[in-house]
Length: 248
Image (tube, rainbow, N blue to C red; front, side, top):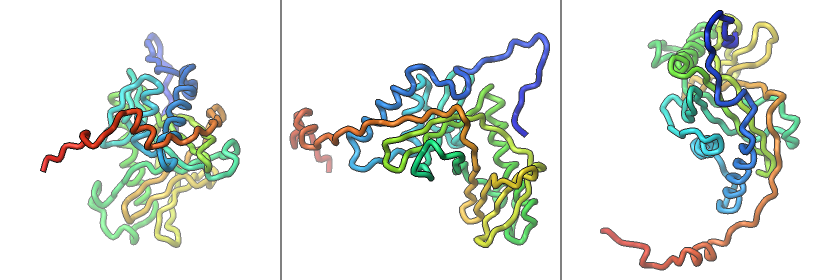
């Protein structure tokens, strides 16, 4: 069940830095500038985890503070974000409806002392996996009023992009059922719709959440710049061998 705030009387509600998916006016242009810089300076078009965290933090004037939990790497006032990147699964990025987000390692063996995982009832293991996730989210919600995840979907040619965010929520295990598949991975499904929602891999304990892309996501295309010539950059810097000091 989503985390819905109860309606209360005479309570001054806190407000987030900005409404969900209503990014600041300059955000998309600042993001475009950062992405073009990457395209112009990197030999290959890559943008992963911590680099995306730092870029998003810069674009919304937040603090980038990488954490072990991975759900609060970006902080702005009473709001924190975890940040994810994925490659588009469709050629036309606008048509993509869902993403699968690697969301940490949840180990029933470590957290609960559970052994012989594959011999256990899948719903029993699924409940443990969700409980571990829920506890991480709860620990952050005791600190921050708003806990979100921001996702950057990268087009296959690194010229089209999609960005969106959603509330990072706890999941009620009673709303899902779990099954082992032929690869001995645990798959979680919604009881209401039979939609695939989670995947958990016993080997490595990787937990993946299938997330629907909201309608108010931002999709944009960038003109690709020419690559900066390495020798010309070094020349502008007036680089010479005396920049190198051999210490040993």
